[in-house]
Image 1 (spheres, protein in one colour):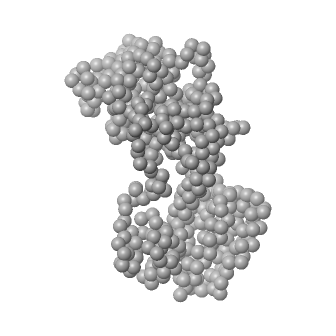
Image 2 (tube, rainbow, N blue to C red):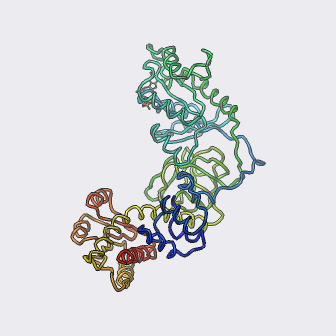
Length: 481
Ligand code: GDP
C-alpha cells in the first residue's frame, strides 16, 4: 500500500504505461499518480513475475522518514534531563502547579516577569535540569505521540486531594498507561481542610496504581500549588525516577526537536516552541519540520531571552521556518538548506498526492462514464491563482492539452481564493474540477464542495498541476477504449 503507479513501475524496471495497461486490461482504472491498492499490487506481482511484499500500512505512512533514519552511535551519549508532562482533571490544579514550580525555581529577578503561562519550561533542582510540558489535554498528548513526538519521559497525574478521581482522571490514567511512561501521582490542594490523601490513594489503587507505602510501585506526593508545600518533594522524586530511566542522548548529533506549539507571530513569522530530543539545536542550522523548512534565525529561551543554542531536553522558541509546523511534528537538522527544502517538498507532494488520489478517483471514474456515453468531450476546469502571472501561464498550458477525443475547457480563470461562487459555477458544468494554484479554499468552502461532490485540487508547483490534468485526460481516453 501507499506506493504510486509510477513509483511501482520504477521499482520494478517497467514503464508506468506498462503498469497502467495491465491494470486497465483487468478493468482497474488508474493514472500514474494514483496509489496502488493491495489487490492491484498482488495482480501486478503475478503479471510481472515478481515478488511483491505488502508492508504494514503504518510503516508505509512513515516511508518518507525512512531514509532519514541514521544508525545510532552511542559513543557520545550523556545523561539528559527528563521531560515531564502534567495531566489531570479540570480544576484539579494542573496550571497552578506548573506555574508554582516555575515560579519557585526561577531566579528571583525573573520571577516577577512571569505574567503569562507558557507551554514548556526548564527548571533546575539541585543543579539538575527538568523540563515541564503543558499539553492542552490528554488527547493532545496522545496525538503528539502518534505523530512521533514521543517527548515525555515521566507523567505526573494531578488529583485534587479534596475531590479525588474524576472522569478525566480516569481518561488520563488510560493515556498515561498507554504511553508506558512512569507515573507519579501529585495529590494537590493538601492545604485544604477537606483534603483526603488516603481517599485518593485508595481510588488510584483500585485502578492498578498502588502507592509505594501500600506495597505498590506508584509514588504519591502530597502538594499544594497554593502554598508550595511538597513541590521540592515532587521534584526530587522526578529526578529519582529519571535516574532509574537512565535517559541518554548525544549532544553532538544532528539535532532533533519536537514541536510542542507553533504559531504565526506578527512581525516575526512562524515560531515553534520545541524540546530538543537529541543533539544541540543552533542558530544557523538548516531545519526541516514535517512539510515546512528553513534556517534557525533566532532562538529564545523559556524566559524570552535570545540564546545561541538549545541543549538536550531544553525548550525554547525557534524562528525561521517558512510556515507554521503542526504540533507534534519533529524538527530535524539537515546538512544543507537544499536538503531541508527537498525533504519538505517531497513530503508536501506526498501528502498532496495522497489527498489528490483520494479526491480525483471518484470524479475521474464519473467522467470516464460520461465520456463512454459520449456525453462529455471536454474536461471543464476553473483555475484560481494567487497572482495574475501564474494565472496566464497555467491557462495557456491547460488550453494546449488536448487530443482527438477530449480537451480541457477553462470555464473560469481568476486571481484570488477559491470561493462559494466558484462552487456554484462548477456545479453548473458537469464534471467541472476546481484547480487552485497557491490558493486554498476556506474550511467552509471545502465542506460545501465535499457536500456538492465538487473536486478541488490545490497545487504549489505548476508542473504538478499540468501533469495531473494530462493524467486525468489520458485516464479519460483509455476509459473510452
Ligand atoms: P487546572 O484546570 O487543573 O489547570 O486547575 P487550575 O490550576 O486552574 O486550578 C483550579 C482552581 O484550584 C483555581 O481556583 C486554583 O486557584 C485552585 N487551586 C489550585 N491548586 C490549589 C491548591 O494547591 N490549593 C488550593 N487551596 N487551591 C488550589
